[in-house]
Amino acid sequence: MLKIAVLVSGGGTNLQAIIDRIEDGTIRNTEIAMVISNNKNAKALQRAEKHHIPSMCISPKDFESRKIFNQTLLKTLMDLKVDLIVLAGFMVVIPPEMIQNFRNRIINVHPSLIPSFCGTGYYGLRVHEAALARGVKVSGATVHFVDEGTDTGPIILQKAVEVKSGDTPEILQRRIMEQAEWQIMPKAIDLIAAGKVKVEDGHVIIEEETA
Image (cartoon, rainbow, N blue to C red; front, side):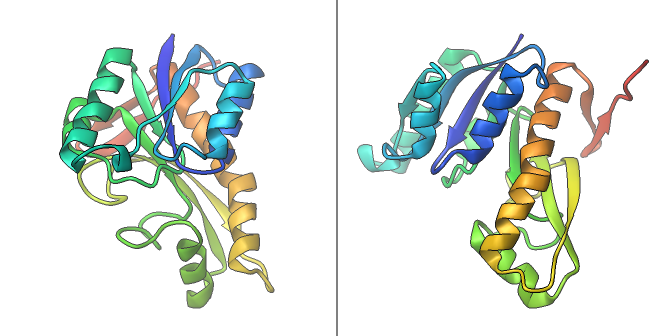
């Protein structure tokens, strides 16, 4: 059984997609050990409570320094003995110590086709604003492992989504969530739970499904 911790900051729509796919069996052999938010008012915490999933708030604002926050977050995850950390809209810089201790065991979903519209400053609606400003015809989402860079870790899955005439950043954001993010994040977790994901020389190798 794959034990995961889901880290969130806001509404938790990606968390909900993961919960739904675990409950309907699309994500196999996986349990959410804990939902952690840096925001005590995050709707994601309400989603966890509704589904009887343990949750907590660990906010940098509640600690004397970022170093103490980082240590507390890492210790919490280590004590939980989670196999995988899932960043589902977690708007906090991941501590280097966490990346070192969970190498290739932290995944994130980014709302573009990396390497386009990613890196420092590209988050939330800013990603979609940039895509529309550039006039791209296709955008999408990427699930990747987290390393020391920003959106630079090995890519696990990507899914393209059409950009339509008249799209606003909000409309494009919603379409990418529905058509890409909510599909490839659960699929990535299921593949990892099944032991089908390996990282070799900085690239992800996915074992083919056998009949």
